[in-house]
Amino acid sequence: MIDLRSDTVTKPTPAMRRAMAEAEVGDDVYQEDPTVNRLEALAAQVMGKEAGLFVPTGTMGNTIGLTVHTQHGQEVICEARSHVLDWELSMMAWFAGCLARAIPTATGQMRWEEIQREIRPVGPHAAPTGLISVENTHNVSGGTVYPLEQLAEIKRGAESYGLAVHMDGARFFHAVTALNVAPAEIAQYADTVMFCLSKGLGAPAGSMLVGTQAQMDKGRLLRKRLGGGMRQAGVLAAAGLVALEQMRGRLGEDHANAAYLAGALAELPGIAVEPYAGTNIVFFDVSGTGRTGAQMAQELLAAGVVMNAMGPNRLRAVTHFDVDRAGCEEAVGILRKLLHN
Image (cartoon, rainbow, N blue to C red; front, side, top):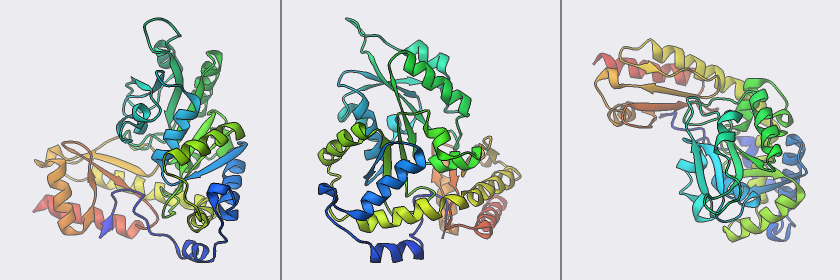
């Protein structure tokens, strides 16, 4: 199978498996796991933050990130198709106790003037704004990347209102690679940043949340409430260390493969490729083939290619290190044959 559903389907590398087998461990709930402690310290250092927190999933990391900044009954400003709104089982409401104030955009990237219009002060009628949440890269917009100046403007504006900024950076290092900057150059424009170790970087599980020491201390308690106290978690953190230390530098290969897919798919009859954002996600519309997205996904699956339908006529292909250029070329060839049958 050529699996292009997501960059979460990757298997741990041999180096990760060795590190997991040899990991020094302790009880992380007591903060005694040396491998977890090392990973948290490294994540904070790389991102230019005081402290880090290892969590099982990106959803948990975002939930904690939203909650450390807010109080029940506040609003969180976010983009209308953002992951924290559409793909996390309403944890913003269920756990953080906040309402989303969604801003629709064409590219998944909010501008400060759009945000400013939606800020609610404390008053007798509207729920006050508690936080601004940005997603970088933006998943369902095709992996779009925030320009640094746009993030800087949002951060300056937020500070002028006394508001914090949380960044859902599930694919944060794809943004780093696309902009060719140091991670801290992006992270400086958010008070807390969540990034996944299991998307792009290839670890079998785990995400990181970074911010101030006080925020991570509060986050550790919230992690326990959410069932995220994993005890001897060093066996997972060891793979995360390999991901963070060794896998960041190869993400350009995934971008090159996605660019190839975008170009090759655009040449197929009935396929309309959405503008390629320069990272590892390609969306395309198949309505011109006379098939729905689900029908096309089923035909591809039967032929040995796995992609997710993302709407009535839309499919998504996500490149990662378990599918090389030859695999991408084979996937395009299979789709071409299907369209000519």
